[in-house]
Length: 187
Length: 197
Image (cartoon, rainbow over all chains, first blue to last red; front, side):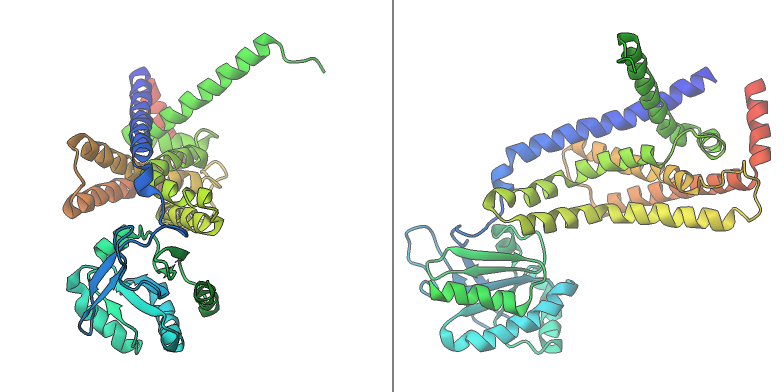
């Protein structure tokens, strides 16, 4: 009986002890990688993008500090999505509607699929199902890492100076997005 | 009323330490001697959902520390809403465990039979289902520790294997809990025989 009690305690302490060690290691890792974990947010320079588009051509944005920017002088809306993401499927038609509304005002839009290039056929099907006309970029894994996308959908509004004005995480109303675009245009 | 004396405080600390040791032993007992542990939980006040909650909380922190840090780092940028969204999304990782325990408790209550004696663990289904989930957590922790020691990310096959082992082990414990609930008298006799040895 005493041996059984000792075995129970030992196993319990090994389990909690292992968790304590793992937690210490994980917290150390977090401390060492804080700058990598820090989100891309308003005021930061928008990471550069160079992505192939679904319907041909490419989309480019940004460059190094001080260098000439592709898309400089124009407000840019970048919508990160995935074909398996339910809220993305809800939001994309609204972003498409905003693209139609703001086309004449020089606002650039791109929806970036964060999946590997092999997801092309799923993206094509999604675009057809939702009747999307806005530019859709593929192969956005590196782009989503550069923008530190942790939620889907994530929408970045980039100002005329190439700096991020607003990052929207998760589903947002068309009105919220329109207000942010108008604010960026008015600067 | 007199202020607590040094002896009172010392006894309080000893009681809390004994309680903590008891909780750890109960968790270990679910892995080493499940039948006697589950029987004690069913028939006494020993052990409970809180013990497993501590274990799940610790495992969650290990798993979710980077995601939580990423979410909380929105706060210095003056953006509380993404921080809250990130924290809530990270907390949702606990949902599968919570759902599994609740469903396990409902199934225990359903299959343990009606008209059970009051001593037959009535009202302890949630605690028993929580303890039945301990092997799943233990296997996940062991898998994490092995991969940290090896310095690599687990493959999909290794992850699936760990899940299969954990689920099977937990299913066995759940079945044991059901047996304890349906046969409390026999479980008590087994206990008496065991102690006589």
